[in-house]
Length: 448
Image (tube, rainbow, N blue to C red; front, top):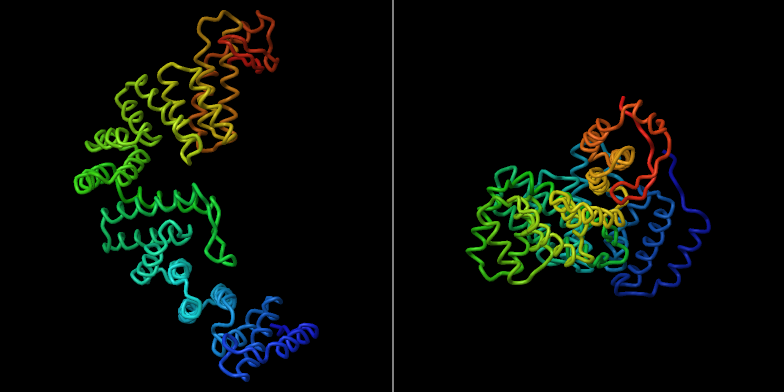
């Protein structure tokens, strides 16, 4: 490897900095001599970092952190960056372990010089999980201290990492299902608080996982882990126990209901009492959705639709609005209220234009409107519904199988070629759908 060198201009700049700041003491060192050495090391390492010559920067970083550890917070960020660079290149396991310890030491040194302990421990814990995942208890202790201290101010990375390491401990028999549920409730509360009011890191230069998308990823990862652990029987049992222990904890009850709704644990004995208690204490989109979900499972679609509409109305800008709209549309469809179903689906598409479930709901509403029309108008809704199912299949792979089934059902109701010909229609011809009150253009298709 060719050794990178500092440019002449960079060296001159470094010397100027040394001359200017040589007399500065305190954070630049205890003596004038320390100050000279400190500023020199800072200037040299920074110049090498600009060139991405991380190996060449390392000795000067070590010098600066030793001679003047309180001179710069950024040098600890840069030291962590260099260690990660080395870890990415190193193949020997023993050397990787030593480098990982050096990385963790950079975080400890930063805390010693600049504080912000719980914030920095969050960053450290995320890296520990990445580089030395076998140290589960140590990682857990590190991240727990961070999350316990920062609560809703925690970043997405530490929250997801904390639940991941708790899951790892559970897999090893060192954590219980009850711990997994209780910590799930707490951690998801922090995640959702940040999704509602996204903020960056405490340090401007550290704000790497600020933003709603990071919290969405954290939420998805945490949900995936939790639902691998707990089934509805487990959740229902733990919910009943917690309700008995903390009967007046409204916030806990709301979170428990959200868990049961996400898993659709409506059959659990504790579900209905919980949903009714939450809704009576403070009607919310979550409690309305819960009651609507329960009634839907009981086949009371008109009663369910009432609550689903309430859930939508109470969730003008909440993070689960799309979920509520979709379920309201599905319940409306099952209740035969196809106009309402399509209205809910269109609201989903305003937020997520490629949502396949919403497109299928619209297709269902169109297909259901064919009765009462004479030929050839009666064929139009099936052709138009086919268009929507086809669009859902192409835009959303998650609904491909369902869309294909609906397309096949529509195709079975296409007219035979002779019938279409009788009405002066040929395959591929444009057709305006008016049957059922629609006014959209589609394409003539015949049965194969």
